[in-house]
Amino acid sequence: MMAGLLRNRRAQLLFLLLPGVGYLLVFFGGPLLSALIGSFRQEDGGFTLMFYQRIFTRASMIRGLTTSIYYGVMPVIVSLAASVPLALLIRKSFLGRKLFSGLYKLPMAVPGIIVGLIVIVVFERGGFLDRLVAPLGLELPKLVRDDWGVGVILASVWKQIPFMTLIITSAFAAIPEDIRYASRTLGASRLKTFFFVEVPLAMPGITAAILLTFIGSMGSYAIPDIVGPPTARPLSVLMVKEFNQGRFNQVYAMGMVLSLFAVSVLLLYYSLTSRIGPGQTRGDA
Image (cartoon, rainbow, N blue to C red; front, side, top):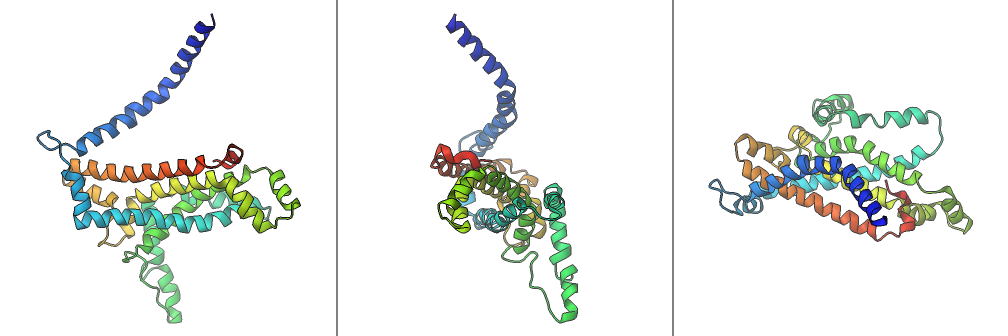
């Protein structure tokens, strides 16, 4: 009888999981497998590594790969430096806190292409800020389509800070106040309590925010295409160019390389979070 109950429970569990798992297999696993196969397939159906070889041998492709990584890493660093203090501020009680908590999330609802246009209007030479400081005899440095991609970083940071702040705020909010009080009671200062107690407990949430921000920034198309320098185009932009020219197998290979970097970051995330004890996972977002 017990064996029958276990079989029924397994059948029920399988039945409950089937819609979600089936959806992932059909609409995610299927296209991903098709792209993976296509990245190794020649026009005559034979096996080839030519499309991957091009990515790591052609100067434009190598520059595109390094640019993609650069556009993934830099916004994360800047966004993290702004999001942690912002998350701590939101935890405090101050006049207009509810209004501020709603307003800072607005950039998440703005499409990337609009963010790029905003950066052009505000930071382009002859734009709003440039005309604002012109009467003072000042001139803004080139921030849009510059060689360092400052415009891309500015746009990505403006777009990603609210998202990262939302996750980090939840991670810090999940830490019980008793732990903070215990640390202060034992003689730790506010600064030591933050760095040695709160940050380790919130680390799963922080690393999740870093991971998602990195993947989103690295794979972004609209922002680098609009405000990025023409001499260094990320793989996401080059993929569209290859697609428009009908080189679908090359597009598959480029997509697989970007996915490989995303998966590598994901594995690094799990490696870091697995080293945190079960008692410290309260801050997981």
